[in-house]
Length: 394
Image 1: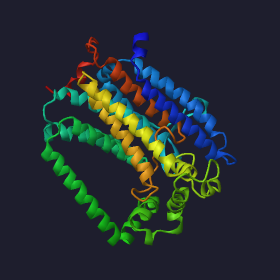
Image 2: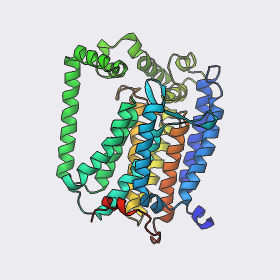
Image 3: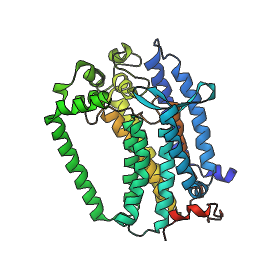
Image 4: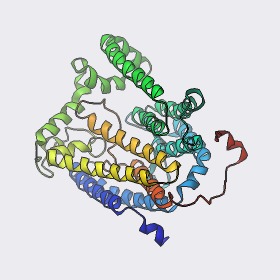
């Protein structure tokens, strides 16, 4: 075990500790004298659990998880189905299961890691051959669509989209044909442009449709992004105040616990989804840049681990982890500066939230396991039941 611990990337550990410090300090500022006061102490407890998950995943040989991947995938889909019937609803999304002791689990967050392991399990069996559309890409898409649909049914658009991003990243590193990638990009861009145009032209009809299906709050999130002139005061309240707070931060910020917009509670959810607004207003462009620099170094270290790994499955999973983190960072920050629609996505390692933090820490632990075990001989016997051998493409 000591030899394994010596292989842990100290730079990544330092970055995680720095992110923990930023999170606790900013959470204290965001919640002091509010109903959420004390959440920074809870975050410390979550980080303790997170570092434990990081350590456990680091020491476990990741190839053992890969060999159990079909079981993990099925169990994860089962959790997503169960939460649809017994889950608790917060902020219009039904996706939390209450655990003993008053804790809660969000299966949609947990499934990100499960999906990365499962897609890596399938891709490694392609033996670096180019992925065929019908034989490879379509089945991978279907395996991703199942949890995507389940999470969309929970009304959690942000996490559902993360599955698509993970799939896209892992397909790319999995040697998808360039022509297929270009066609997919063209379809995506065309659909995006066409969808935005149709949304603006047929706004009232779209609004009535979403009202009928009970998703009118989606309009409140999309309107400030695509049609601000048609957005209600309620719809633009969040993003408008967030932009004002970010702009008022300037270069150096208004000072710790001196952010006028944040401290007056004019920005909702500053302890969670909107925590970047606190950083931008109180520490300014410089503070925001330091945070982004830490993210950059973390992702750079993960990519280096992928490049140095001799095992074929390791790089696939690391790319999935990187895609997941990049999506969360871009979406969370982008939705407050007008680049993306408002969704319930947390800022990795910074926002308050036990499940999100522990899963992100476990994901880094999985990457560390790849660093530790990626150059070892695979001496773990096959433990898959015969009925799962259908996943093994020859």
